[in-house]
Image (cartoon, rainbow over all chains, first blue to last red; front, side):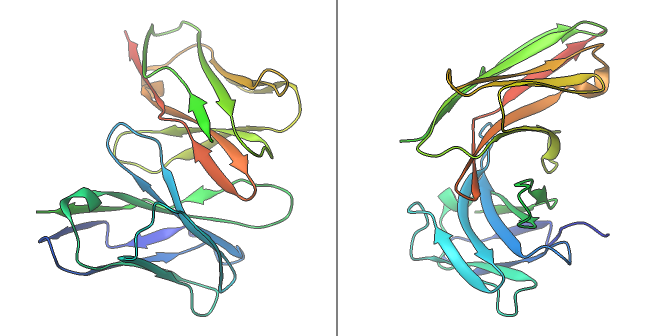
Length: 114
Length: 108
């Protein structure tokens, strides 16, 4: 069990550029979540997948954000036309739907938009 | 709406006991998690309560009262490595709704 992995760990980009992050969940987990965390705040839900289906998307997620999980394994989160307000830690978590709601978090991708 | 409240910061002394409170008002409830998060790292699981009462796990215990919308995390025999943020999170349908976190500083 290698845990949840995320790539890259850090990303610095200029305002207006597009960025894409990748998350690899624990292999037997069929649920995958994306959260965003800013300094001094708790993680904020963005979206989640069960297998390849995107089941819920936060109203806070603007049209510039899109997430995919094409084969029900890894997932990508893309942010188009980045803004300075997008600077945050992007956390991925996975879980298995067996009545235990525990989510296992990856190390996160820290995005800085300059 | 969704509202989860916890103190922003707490301090304690090594070897002491500290209680971190969390109150919540959410549209759905499927349990409550406590996570620990060290600066710059991912949250790690501490406890999960879905029924009323106390769950004990080593130095950490967590309590839940669903009728009061209230939980606490109790940390005993504090160690310096317990300096971290402690996140209270309610399970709402299948996603976690987090509080802002409580930053605990343990002093020698």
